[in-house]
Structure formats: C-alpha cells, structure tokens
Image 1 (cartoon, rainbow, N blue to C red):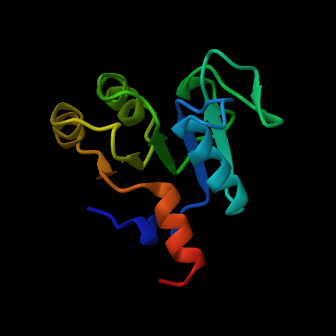
Image 2 (image 1 turned 60 degrees about the vertical axis):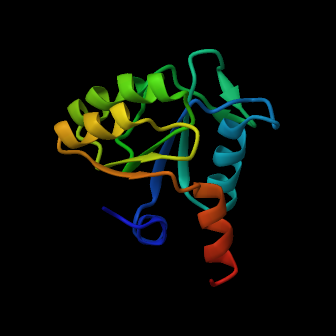
Length: 133
C-alpha cells in the first residue's frame, strides 16, 4: 500500500470525485487543498460546470487526460461503484479518505488489483508535508 506523502511527492495529476462548490463540503476542501498545493486537479461532479473557476467534469470518462490519482469525496457506496471504472480507465491509484471508504470498497480495490490508500485525509497530509513533518 502506498503512503500519502509518497503519492503527494510523486504524483502531479489528481481527480476529485465528488468535488463540490460548497466551501463547507469535504469535496471542496480536498479540491482547494490540491489546487493550493500546485497540482493539476480535475473536479468531477455532474451537478456543476465549474468550481472556483476550474472546469468540472461529469465523470472520470469525461476527463481530458488520465489522472495519476483519483480521490473519492463520495459516500462509501458511490466509492464502491466507482472502483471498476477507475480500473477500466487504467488510473494508477484510488485514494479513499475517512468517511468515504467501506470494507466493500477496499475489497473491490483488492479484487480489481487496484492500488489504494484509505482512511487517510489528503488535506491533512498536504498540511503535514507543507510543515515538513
């Protein structure tokens, strides 16, 4: 299993499934943290055309390029349903933060031979990296 810091230091292109326009929502917090970290970020949410001036996409299949990592800011059941699509598109890593994963989602990753990181918050990981901890 990969470590958060390793992913954040070696990967440059992220997709945030469940990105949100509402600053109170986790999907917005993750998106903002990645953008502030200087990464290329593709928000995914069929409800929006853009978020904070960044073009938003309806699904993983709609992205203009393949991300290195997909971060799920979705409910656990939706994360589970996304696993086969992540695998099918050849995306390297699925990052499933606290509150977004379930045992079924982890089993789906394992069954699909997909690299994943779960129960680790990308926002906290970015902050720790910035502070050099």
